[in-house]
Amino acid sequence: MKNKQFILATDLDGTFLGGSDNERSALYRWIESKRNDVGLIFVTGRDPQFIEQLCSENGVPLPDYVIGDVGTTIAEVVRTPAKVTVRPLAVLEAEIATLWRDSGEKVRALLASAAGLTLQNTPFRYRVSYHFDPKTYDGEAERLVRDNGFDPLISADCFFDVLPPGVSKGPSLRRLLKHLTIADSAVLVAGDTLNDLSLFETGLRGVAVQNSEPALVAQLKMHPNVYRASRPGAGGIAEAIRHFEFIVEAGVTA
Image 1 (cartoon, rainbow, N blue to C red):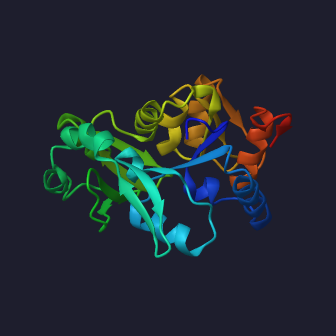
Image 2 (cartoon, one colour):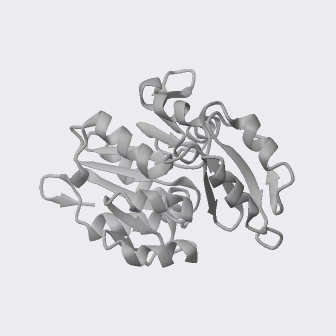
């Protein structure tokens, strides 16, 4: 990865998987045609099992690495003739595990009667996630989470995540890039909801695609490193690659 000229670190839902069929196909073909020069990192709230299925069945380009579970999973991606495997990197997840302290049961008990939250059934390793109803939410869950040493994260007005302190997409991407010795100048981050804000807070060049949630857009006024695309999803990513003039071959821009 460190020898690649351009690294796209992108959210999935609404971003890499968003936009029109033609825009997605064009971006995916472009990436696949330049894999010697282009690296791909999925930075998502989705879990490894979802990503394995996505890359096995739907013709989506295979990422080199995954920051999953809203930053609580850091993994490499391995393809064999039989299947695609998202394999967590223990050396990069050790601090995350220590910060979490196997607290899933504690968090679920803490928020068992919290207004506006419905527990998601997926057994995440280092997070607890809820469906979020802004109409019935009273703000108490955020206070409880912070008072007990965790970080709450509300995104897209429908998700509430409880994360280890200081852990989210941006810090985990930073940890991976440092491990891989990748220069900031090679990286573009992309997203569309508040759980992508920490990506833009890294200072890396970024793109908020046209369909970004208003709460994220409001925050981006403080981040001049972020380009606001006029196209949604994959079309917005392609637009930003051109805007920032990322070079992937001698004399050629995307």
